[in-house]
Each structure stands twice: as C-alpha cells, then as structure tokens.
Image 1 (cartoon, one colour):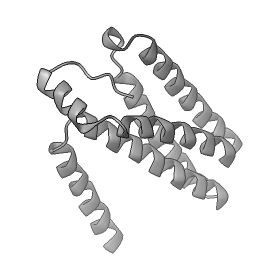
Image 2 (cartoon, rainbow, N blue to C red; image 1 turned 180 degrees about the horizontal axis):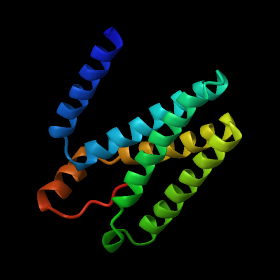
Image 3 (tube, one colour; image 1 turned 180 degrees about the vertical axis):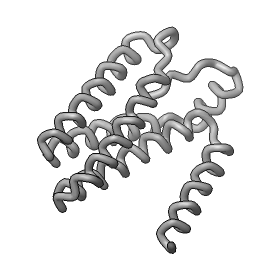
Length: 141
C-alpha cells in the first residue's frame, strides 16, 4: 500500500516537472531516466531477478528509442546521423544484455548515455534560451 502511494506521488511529480519543462529539460530528464533504469537493470542482473531486469531494460530501451525518434535530420546533419547510429547500437546492445544477462553490456550503454548527457548538460543556458526564443528546431540527443 505504501509503495503504491509513493509510486503514484513520483508519477504525479514527474508529470508536473514535464509540464513546466522546455525541450532541453525534457531531454535531460529522459537521459537521466535511462541512466536510472540501467542502474536498476544492472542490480537486477546481479541479484538474478530476471523479471525486474526485463522491465528495466525494456524501459531504458524505450527511452532511448524515444530519444532516437526525436532526432531532426533536417537541421543536424552528420551529428544527428551519428547519434541515430549510436542510439540504434545502444538498443541492440541492451537486447544482447537481456539475452546474456551481462552487466558489462549494461555498463557500456550506461557510459554512452552518460557521455551524451554530459554534452547535453554542457549547453549554456543562454544558448538554450536563444534557440527556444527563436523557435528553431532543436535536434535532441
């Protein structure tokens, strides 16, 4: 009962954060969510909890697929093509991790996501605001 209430609170808090977020912040939340799910998947593999492993890897894959589907090839050029390939690689590797119950693969994907997040987080606020004010397309990733 208590667990259900906490999960409901977390879900509502996330909805509130998303409602007030701009595009950059939503991508930051997605990247952080993928990292969180990968940590949970790793722990699940280590504990041999196959049901939880499958759930967390599936959610991480869905988040990465969401990031991949947001890429704007019209404005991103080669960078976007590389991100698309990298996201595809990560999704494929998570499938491998699930089949092989391999934490090393999960750590590899987590490391890649963390690098992307570090780059995304490093975009200066002034640049973000300028892009958002201009209404330009934002190539996510």
